[in-house]
Length: 271
Ligand SMILES: C[S@@+](CC[C@H](N)C(=O)[O-])C[C@H]1O[C@@H](n2cnc3c(N)ncnc32)[C@H](O)[C@@H]1O
Image 1 (cartoon, rainbow, N blue to C red):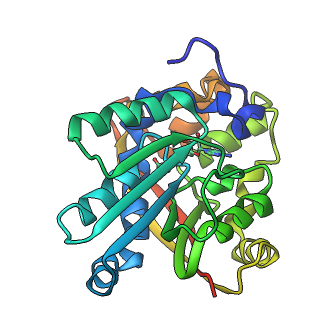
Image 2: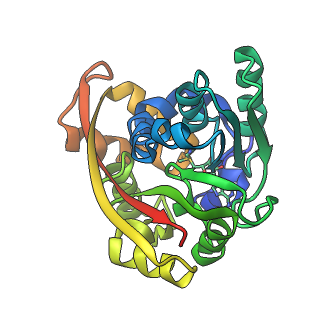
């Protein structure tokens, strides 16, 4: 755990995302399925039968979950590859770089950067991904305009955002009810509504937009689920923990729970 506790209102700031170990331990469990789903939509193998170079961007990469998954897809293809992965959290990027060194994945490049102010040239990428990332931007239009700017003509982006049943939904609702969480607006859920998501993308310059939702059940031991709350102290309140145990009908940390989760996915083409 980081020594400085993040506050709920920091969700949109770097301070909220400072614990690489917690993020890396949990990323695959909660987000691995959704990262793979975004990659599958891109149909990268087919792209590389017609193109000899491929430039990929993973926005809000965290400790690199999607970036490493997409690296696994392209690493044996006969094509010149560049994968850029950015996040505004320095500790997460440092952690991802260390993982990359161990893998000797030289085509992967991790950089500390704000997704709303990308330091890439116009029309750089063939594919842009972001797995559970853009929903945390304080200014969606600014961030989406940046995605549009760095995409090549005819290229695709696949970005997703939590719908209302995200993994922490039950404890967060309880924390809001008991007042331990002051941030009751949960602005990151703006994109939970596909119509709103689409409207913001249109405002950012996209015209070829389709959205759909995809669901996934996650099985986890209750104790492990609660350990994830360490990144969010307002959920460690006794009343919140009791409400959460009741909602899942569990008594022991070892009891397994099933989390129903859904993401809204936007598939975008730059015309
Ligand atoms: C829920 S995590 C998802 C991480 C990763 N995509 C994955 O699938 O494991 C959200 C990530 O978004 C990053 N993030 C939030 N706002 C950002 C911004 N404005 N610019 C860059 N990264 C941002 C956070 O630092 C965090 O790593």
